[in-house]
Amino acid sequence: VQNCRVKFRAIRKRCAIFCSSGIVHDNFDGGQKGIQFAMSLSRIAAIRGGTRMVQPLVSLDHVEARTRVINLYKAWYRQIPQIKIDYDIPKTQDQCRVKLKEMFVKNMDVKDIRVIDMLVIKGQMELQETVHTWKQKHGLMAYWKPSVDPKPKDFMGKFLDGH
Image 1: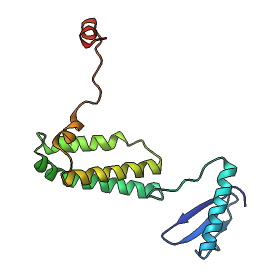
Image 2: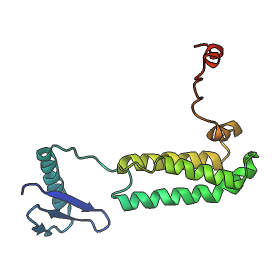
Image 3: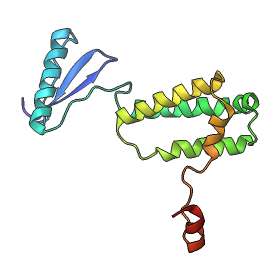
Image 4: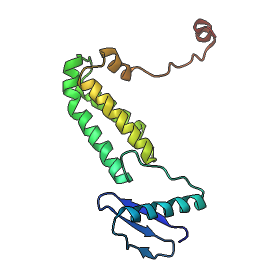
């Protein structure tokens, strides 16, 4: 079987091998031998194709990763009023929501499922630290600080800056 891709669905515990010829070999019972056979075929196809097989962190496909991102966004969105009270942040809830949206939109163009999963895991850890007030106020206020100071363009600004 050449140029085969293996699509493993953990929900159904079965394998299906989709060949480039369009023939679907779906005669596996979902047992351990069938899964091992399918995984070995996928490794062979990956070696021939010059690609590398990687294990997913959490999500199996883009739909599941997108669902996890949306759930994380909703969790942060729900916690904003309580975070504002706990940390006594001098920002309105609308400003906090705009900053939340900005942080999620910043990573909008990430397409790799493993990277998306890692960002979601980090976001969940950050949310947990924030909700349990393990962070300090200046740690939250750092989100509103510009990350890079603009370099001076005129002579006097460069002189005073030390360039």
